[in-house]
Amino acid sequence: MNKIYIIVVLVIFLFSCKNDSKKTLPTITGKAGEVVVVIEKNVESSDAGQLLKKILTQEVIGLPQAEPSFDYVNIPTNAFSSIFKSHRNIIVCELNKSEEKGKIIVKKDVWASPQIFINIIAKSETILESLIKTNENLIISSLLEAEEQRIVDNYTKYQDKSISNEILKKYDISLKIPKGFTLDLAKDNFAWISHETPQVSQGIFIYYYNYTDTNQFSKQSLIDARDEFLKKYVPGPRENSYMSTEHNYEINYHEFMIDSVYIAKLMGLWKVEGDYMGGPFVSYSTPDTKRGRLVTVEGYVYAPRFEKRNYIRQVEGILSTIKIK
Image 1: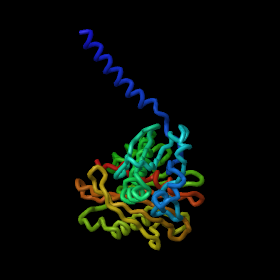
Image 2: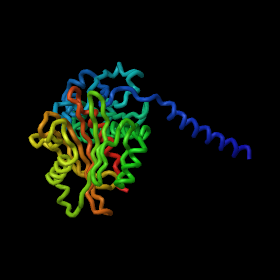
Image 3: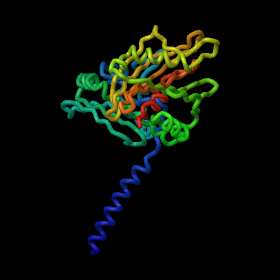
Image 4: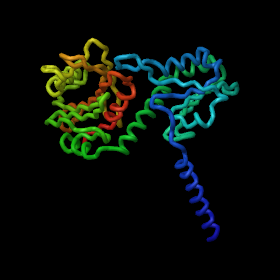
């Protein structure tokens, strides 16, 4: 009996230590959209290092001015101390002669939480370059998903349940709306939620209409529906002005799944007909077959004096929480 008791206590102790170690991880540091790349100077200047930098700093789609996907911060290996190990996004590039084929390891919460850690290991610079080129999507998607999850976790923690519940009750649509937003308009098939500061405006539109044909999910059909709703419900600051789509700029169209639910995504620029306002937008459209409707949730940003990458990612974080009830 004593032996059994000792074993049980030991198991509980080990389990407790494991949980405590997770709890005691420090909170991440660093700015949103920033990535620390730990790499030797000679490797960074090689084709492999330059390729990695090019991938990380490639231009974000759908913004009015050029902005990098990530802010690149280079740290030499010998300078990678504890002060940098708590950073939110870390990539470590290693040359290891014993590593025959090369590999990429993606881990969470290695030195801090919620952290993403990517370790790229190769025998030579040539293999390293090939490894980076082959796994470009893995590298970028791992970083973007980590950034989005942090946003969603924060919105879940600081959710304005009164607005979320009102949207759910009126439209049978679940969205995690964070505190600081207000419900500005709630028509039968259109809602407008916004967060306003003296210098930045972030907003969410929700609208839906009858769904009869899969062709309604084509890029042009979604743009046409968007323009129709915004002209009707989103006036500009001047008489007869209204929000619309900037058709002289490329609108990106992408299809993907969220929890086995089909999403058609648009990213582009909005403008105000009859005025000079404009900025980026992103929309998610999905079928509600239960009610025979096509549902769109959209986020926009107006921030004429600031870079917009992080602001548009924040509103897209809200869109990513969509669930049709």
